Length: 175
Image (cartoon, rainbow, N blue to C red; front, top):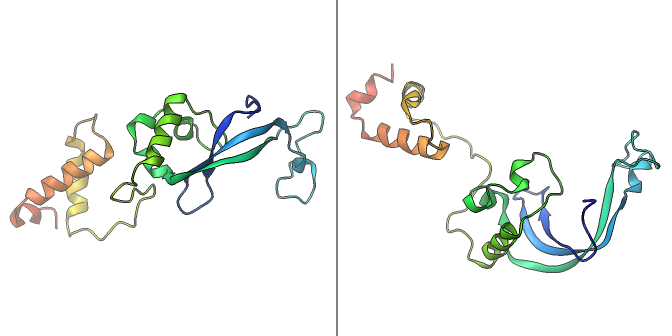
């Protein structure tokens, strides 16, 4: 945040919502300065360790530039290989992060394209009750999967193998 300069653009990101994501563009109108709410006892952002001569918290002032045609969700960003290196994804609990030029262009392009046909979700949905024996099957078979496979590929491979088993083949896992 301290590196932001007046006139720099940034994404406006909804983080504390059911579906977090990039929703707009803002412009820096005032460069970083100490966040004085850190010194106000009783304020939600009060920090007893922050001193006026050595502030721990900063803020910038921004202005609205534009709303994106559609939100680019965190789940969509996580699922896009072109954005795999974004600080948003690689640095945990980071509220302000640098966005490379290629990443910026890619997110703006995504926001200008139709939303994914199938909703992308960042959180796992509740697992449905598996067919009897499936959990035992997965425990036994997952070790045989290729080390370089993604989690999604592993699930697909295990599901396909389970579906290919006959009832007799599944029976050994049901006991």
